[in-house]
Amino acid sequence: MNHSLKVAALQCVTKKGDVNHNLSVITQAATAARDAGAELLVCPELCTTGYDAGRLFDTLAEPQNGPGFERLSTLARSLGLALCYGYAERDNHQLFNAAQLIDHQGNRIQHHRKTQLYGAYEHTWFTPGTTPGTVVDYRGFKFTTLICYEIEFPELARHNTKRGTNVLLVPTAVQHQPGIDDVTQLLVRARATENNAFVVYANHAAGPDTLKFSGHSIIAGPGARTYAISACNQHTLLFAELHTDAIAETEQVLPYLADLRTDLFST
Image 1 (cartoon, one colour):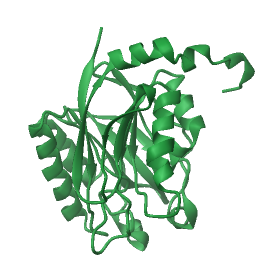
Image 2 (spheres, rainbow, N blue to C red; image 1 turned 90 degrees about the vertical axis):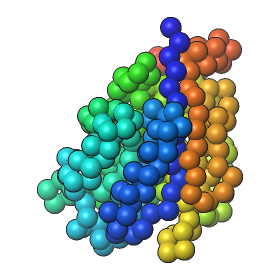
Image 3 (cartoon, rainbow, N blue to C red; image 1 turned 180 degrees about the vertical axis):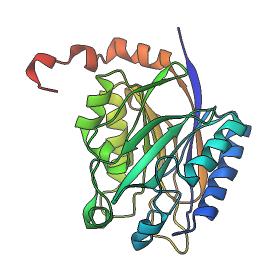
């Protein structure tokens, strides 16, 4: 049976440390996405606090069921729209770069802590997660959430797609730097191709008071197909219709997962 799901990726400007403002941006985007027929919205990494909040993470980080979650849970339920978003999580004395997936009824159905922290900045503020991802069923698809740098490691995507995942949700915060276009134009599409899966990769947009984020969010799919891509680093919403038939059809000609010699590898 073919299942379909219309997804949206939010590329937005956040304000450092201004959680109320950032949640308002998500609210406006979620409403626009719902009005355009989307059933799931993916937001950027650490979008509730701003990626560049730095020492403010210590005061703004919240538990999984904190006020940010409560507000977004209410939003998801009121719109009938699933939401995936990145936030700074506090668990006792530890801080994590985390993301949550909330279904259209406002229930948390997936939580992930970033395992592959990027650079000295993230290692300064966050503790690495210890779980390479989980798989959750939702509306005929199987979802895993990864965060930014993690999608650049083929092992993490393959670990989860071997367990059934066919949609990878990737809240992201990528800045302009040499070779960065290879991430969206090459690595994200490669992960979609080699795992016969969809990848929804939502980056920050660049604002006057933010880091110079590269934008270029993308929704990629089986067979290296680009379903939607942003050609800029400005605020935008991307939309794509995902179909499980696309996975089945591509599997006929590119059966990477079926042909994988699992007897040769330990994972």
